Amino acid sequence: MLKLNNIESYYGSVYVLKGISLEIEPGQIMCILGTNGAGKSTILKNIMGFVKPDKGWIEFNDKRIEGIEPHKVVRLGISLVPEGREIFYELSVKNNIMLGAFTRRDGKKKILDDFERMLELFPPLKERTGQKAGTLSGGEQQMLAITRALMARPEYLLLDEPSLGLAPILVKEIFKTIKTINEKEAVTFLLVEQNANMALSVADFGYVLENGRVVLSESSKALLNNENVKEFYLGGKEGGVKGYRRYKRRKIWK
Image (cartoon, rainbow, N blue to C red):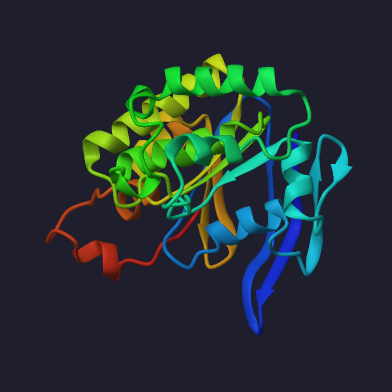
């Protein structure tokens, strides 16, 4: 299990995370919803070791991991697909994928077998292994970033805004594949996402983050039926002029 307990984090004098506690159980797809600046990506950076918490602790499989180096976090079984994908544009698709196995020590054959299996999960990449990654479409680049992360054989995969910049039809394809990987590869997912509808459609459980604090944590079904979530994150409204209540009514989380 992955646990965060009372995590506080600053960027200089800016108080970003204000006592974040959450748990992600094996086999789940869990999502964190929130607006820009809520602290969603900072949670992932704390887990991966890019940012050390100023207070609190992080535990993975009964081991404290806060503040350890990112490559050691990967070896423990956690991988990250960062916001914006961060692929190596001048390298080939194949080389990008193989870089994901850099921390592995289980032999070339197993790595090559996994490479072939990844291409089966993402067929559009299969015909493009020799292309430079920078020539791929946005959706293909997102597939590549996920494939690269999976090559480390993670137990937990963290995805930061996987729908960012993608057309709706590609977003549906990406999230469908996330669900397939969760079920067939037994990978647990933590999604940070602004597309609440899509995230909740595949997730088992969700947290709503505002101004560095968790204001709501419930099953995805309950969140989809929550009036505040519907109004402020799913585009719903209770009446009146379209969009008016979104900016005028104060959120009261229960």
